[in-house]
Image: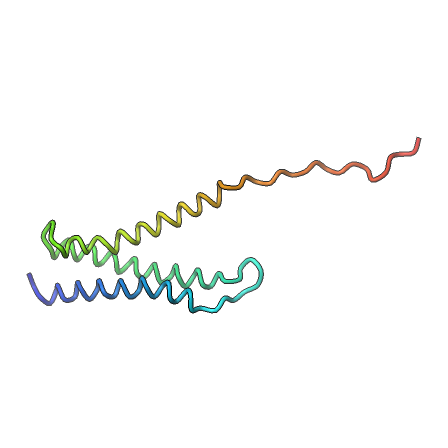
Amino acid sequence: MDDGRTAIFWGLVVLWGALFGAAFLGAWATPATGDGFTRGLNRVMVFLSMQAVAGAVAAVVLVTGRRLFEPGSFGRRVSWAPAASAGLLVLALALLLLWVTFANPAPQVPAAPGAVTQPVR
């Protein structure tokens, strides 16, 4: 096993951890902008964009770890952790979207109001 490649692998693992944590800290530290419904949407975008970058690094860590370490080794098991956390995040977002979609049915439209006054006979 080449020490230079393992050092790069562990550096990528540390980079993934820093990006993963920075997504939470960045979203928390970003001031909310916008008005009304979209207020604070910039925080969500900071979180998701940083998680996308962390997910790309997680994919590189997974491929590198599978090529570099033998099955069952510690490095091989560690290489699955970033990809698994990215997958769990995607699953959580999908479940959140499903819950928001189906939790509350569409409001019932009330019947059209009748005449304000009774017609004169």
